[in-house]
Amino acid sequence: MTSGCSTHPTLFWFTFFHEIGHILLHGKKYISIENVDLVGENQEYENQADSFASDCLLTKNEENEILSNHEITTADLIKYSKKFKIHPAIITGRLQHKGILPYGMGKEFFIPIELNE
Image 1 (cartoon, rainbow, N blue to C red):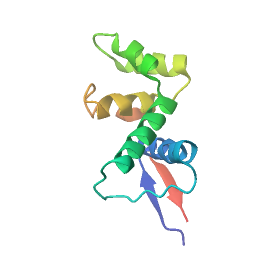
Image 2 (tube, rainbow, N blue to C red):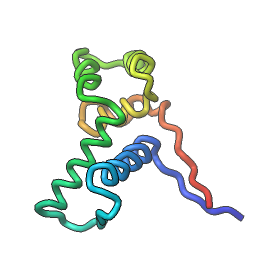
Image 3 (cartoon, one colour):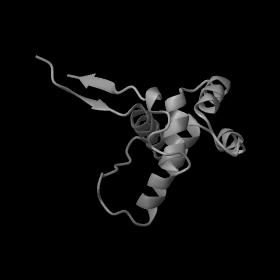
């Protein structure tokens, strides 16, 4: 019998690159603790890892190009995903997280990643 869990693909890839960012930027001995209020250097390290993950998935220039459209459609998401060679769920998730797109838009792009033991 297998038990597993499902995760949102955008969250999965953001988390993956966030943790890679910690290793590359802060060394493999850096320890990060989840759900703890961070101050000072630890908060700065988390911000750096967040920026690293964001830029790995969609650069600021790419995001700005997408945002140069006054109204972003599902067709635009597909067009930019092909242009930037990234899954449209990554673009959609970023823009939803920033409050630019409603959470219902682009839901057809989100296919849960099943993680089984």
